[in-house]
Amino acid sequence: MAILDATASRFRDVALLIGRILIGVLFLIAAYNKAKGYGGAVGYFTKLGVPAAGVVAPLTILFEAAAGILLIIGYQTRLVAMRSPLSALRRLWSRTPTSPTETSSIIC
Image (cartoon, rainbow, N blue to C red; front, side, top):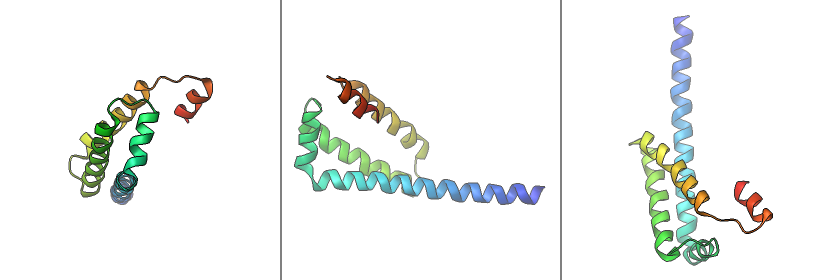
């Protein structure tokens, strides 16, 4: 039984590592796409009604890039993992939908 526990523990560690790296890569891709299409990102944030979109866009790019790098290298992963959903929820709650269609697009 101890051999099975040790094997399961190893597989769990490898699965967590792979998951952490994949999520970090997703953050880096999102940051790269926002940086590459910076004008579009600012326009999108403006369309969403984000105040000071020209300031928020580079901060978002910086946060996503830093979070991706920190997750990939494994530094402060719990802090990054806790901060990321909180940031997304804050952005979600700051939105005021104007129609039922817009509400469903925010949720999905």
